[in-house]
Image (tube, rainbow, N blue to C red):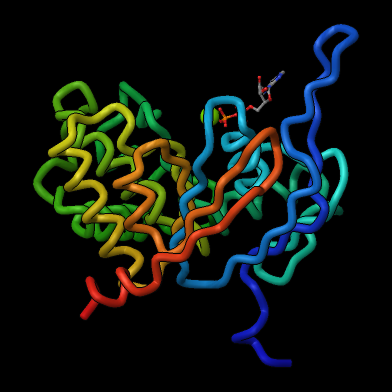
Amino acid sequence: MNEISQPLLQLRAIRKAYRMGSETIVALDDVDMDIHRGQSVAFVGSSGAGKSTLLNILGCLDRPDSGSYCLNGRNVDILDERDLAMVRNREIGFVFQNFQLLSRATALQNVAQPLMYRPMRPADRVEQARRALDRVGLSDRGHHLPSQLSGGQRQRVAIARALCGQPSILLADEPTGNLDSRTGESIMRLFDELVEDGHTVLMVTHEPEVAQRCERVLRLFDGRLVSEKCNTGERNARAA
Ligand code: ADP
Ligand code: MG
């Protein structure tokens, strides 16, 4: 088997609907997608197009009604809740628009959180969390609470938390949405570096300048994938 040609992530005929009283809202309709290791992908489309629903399914936070999802060679549709939680913990790092940090925990404790579910020595957890904080340029802020950090620093802590468990994919829903443009730019530079380091990054964004930095831009409309644009040339130009 040729490992290079096997997608890290494969969706087939994914459908998800929500029932609201007597009405059914189709949030995702027949979505097919292959994403390979190391790619950066932006999901764009107007509000209600299905972007967050898609990201939640990719992140195993939600399940489709039908269709199949293969992640890192594993069919996740057939997993029970416990195994799904394990896949989520091992394979996925999530970054949210509003950071979602624990307010009473220090930056270092927040970053170490995904490791709490793994059989590790406490000292190793701390060491791994320190390395992740270091990676995002916050090694001197480990003992600060989120309230003692700026918005950009909070998002860096959230990115360190997402990275800390060494997942196969990073998912981000509007990661620069709550930041001013200069801070957002520095967060995007960090994502660029992570992609250059070989991470696979999938993000939802409504900002064209953010989407343009990703290798692939996938547009959703009414729950369907309607177009794809590739920015390979620009990425190569930037990496050169
Ligand atoms: P986007 O992130 O692109 O704005 P969403 O994935 O949040 O879109 O939503 C897609 C559609 O599904 C929208 O019509 C939305 O109203 C509906 N939807 C999303 N989540 C729910 C829910 N929990 N219950 C009912 N409808 C929902
Ligand atoms: Mg959304």
